[in-house]
Length: 228
Image (tube, rainbow, N blue to C red; front, top):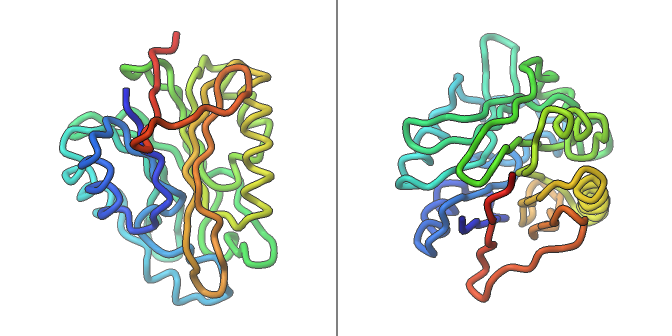
């Protein structure tokens, strides 16, 4: 299974580019189709939310042309009710949908103003490459969430972040540690670029079951072997 870990926040273009390189699984960063709205205390960011299930994800699935897509959207379930929803699917075949559970509150991370903690159960789904789970945002830095997924049989975790350099270093340390502790393969995509005066670090994180870094091929894609 060839995997693209894209840092681009323009989700639809990122999907087309990755599919053009032959990716069979495309992983996008946190809030894959909108700006990181929680960088400022600006309630205008709420206008980016889409009614669930988000149209942006459904359109990206069409662009993926049969490839698997792991991405997260900013969704509204009614007046004043907002979530970040992560999904893993290919056209006509959704395997996972979960909502970010741990909502961050820190300087430049005003998530509690923009979305609520998710209440859907975490899910581990069978996929062509093995039992897989999703994590996005702050959930990637919550050891208890990793423990729950490992206890539920996950062998692969796909993650999306929107993080500047220091948070990105911290997330990679946690991910590598959790990969080694639970025998997981972990693949992460982090947002790139500058938005609302916040500079996102970009980059990919890929770790094998021993916690060691995995390297991409010459074309930038990763190889994900069958994991059981």
